Structure formats: structure tokens, C-alpha cells
Image: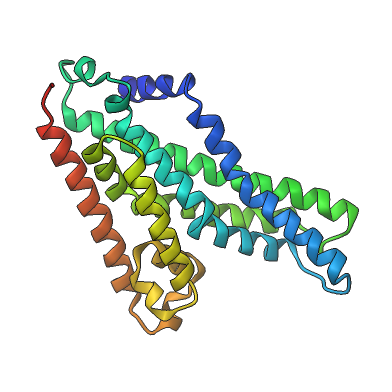
Length: 249
């Protein structure tokens, strides 16, 4: 299994997707810096803390920018054998097809956590620069470590909700359909992030859980968790089933 994971990571070595995803993950910290600068020059009397920046960053990470990036990565990982015409080379290999899918999901998990850390580091570095120039209230490194845990959990939670896009990428053998559907899904995030019913929408429910907002919506926490697990399991099972039935063409 470790050899398969190593091989999957080696395939990413020459891919442009890895550096592009890192650039994308840094988009949120950059937006937060620009927002902080705008607030400083328009309302210099208004103060905010490092935690405020991280809280806003987590909102963008989980509901907007990084979610789109994770879907793009998922579609790329699960459709590349079709788009690069390498499926005929892989399927005859005496390795269980289930293991091949497991390796892809494990690679996706590693990638998701890595990008969450990139977003956290980007926010810390740019906030530090802002602090030295303009000043931030309650600027402590220990506070950033508390947010690191949340960012790591955000990567894991978002990983749990992208499995349907893995199946969609296999089924359509490309990136277009998953990206279109993900754009619709993100619009749903925007519409429901301030609504109680967002606790029942899987891609918003993850954010509510991490921020501890589920109870205030009036819906049981177990119901939100159950919906997330249901989406994850259905997407994963569909992905395994489809790839297992795939034939050489």
C-alpha cells in the first residue's frame, strides 16, 4: 500500500496541479490582508485581532475558495487516468482496484490537510506583516496554534464531503462536470451560511460543526453529522463500485 501511495505522489511531481492548488490556497490569506488594509484606511479607529482574521479566513476556506480547490483536486485525481489515457496501463496491474481507489482517497486527504496548513501559514505570515506595520490587537503566536487545529479539522471535514465529486469525475471522465456542480454547491454555501437550514446542507454543515453553531440552528448535532457521513459514504461507495466495474476499452 505504501508503494502505491508513493507512486501516486510521484505522479504529482510533474503535475502543475500541485503548485496551482497552493497558489489557490493562498488566495484567502491575500484577500484577508486586502480586507484588513481597506478597513484600516477607511476606518482607522476600528481595531481587530489575529483571531478575527483567522475566523474570517476559515469562512472563506470552508465555504468558498478552498472548497472549489478541493473539488478540482478530487476531479483531477479520479479522472487523470481517463484524460491521460493511462487506464489501460493501470488496470492490468495485479493490484486490487479497491486499493487503487483507496490510495487516491488517501492522497486526496493528505493534499487537503496540506492545503489547510498552507492557508493557515499564509494567514499567519501576512497577519504578522500587517501587525509590524499597522498593529493588531491580541497578536500572540499561541492564538494562531489554536486556529491551526481548526484549519486541520476543516481539511478533514471538507475531505469527507467531496467523495461524490470523485464518482462524478469517474463517471464523466473529466473535470468539467464536477467543477460546474461545485460552483452550484458553493452558491448554496453562500445562500445558507447565515440560515438555520444550513445545518442540513452537508457543505455548510461542516462549517457549522467546526464553529459550534449547529446547536443555535435548532437542529440536532447528530443529524448534521449523520448527513455528512451519509454523503461521504454514498460518494465513496459509488466511486468504488464504478471503478470496480470499469472495463478496458
